[in-house]
Image (cartoon, rainbow, N blue to C red; front, side, top):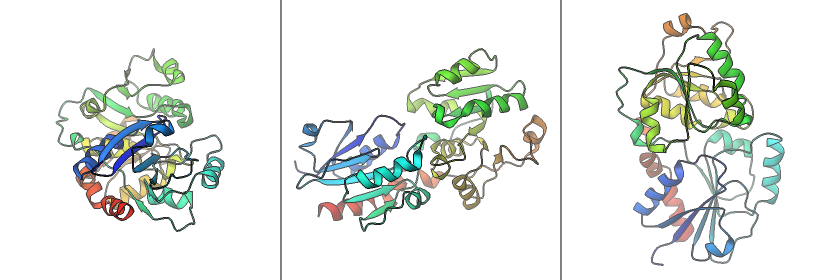
Length: 303
């Protein structure tokens, strides 16, 4: 092949909007790129670069082939920390690592000399510039609703504190969440929708709910939903995590935090709260990747 071919390899267990972003960006920079879910080894023989979104990767590197391990998140409960330690021991050493946040890189704690860089979380440009003059919903939650996130108590508390709130849930619900709220007259389930439709749905709400469990690994990861809420211009209601607090401070935002004893959730304090939604225009994916150092890293690995 005339240019190095890259296989973006993922296990199919998580939402990874950055896969298509990477594909567009890398193709624009002269690489041939394919997105592959759990490919068999024989499918990779024509690729120079294996770019794994971890997961696990125990296979030793083939001669002449380059491996990149990208960590978007840590392992999920139960026994998340133990799973991460096991992966450090058994994963094949790559040629380079990419981490979704400095928090995550520090917590995973690799101590070898393999090159690494931080690739911050970004947003698609389609989330910017929406008219939100007449919201149809009070609240929106977008993203994963699996059992590990323990969303039912939070959603129940929010609905009890804000009676009559019109609530949109975007994404495929777990069976437990569907059972708990399917009969609620103010809750609307969108189900799974194409990523291109997400900005328009978010723009129909006033408040964006960022319900991140305050435990490992969730509390050290960059929540894409929070960036997307900010891009659309929503007022953010959130749980308190180290990443969110740092983001709010660095960006001069002002978010309403759930679980604060001095600010119980009800309509009156919510309506008078001085929300500030920070600009995230500089976090558009293409701009982020241009400045991330990824093209320079690939140049060194293939040079």
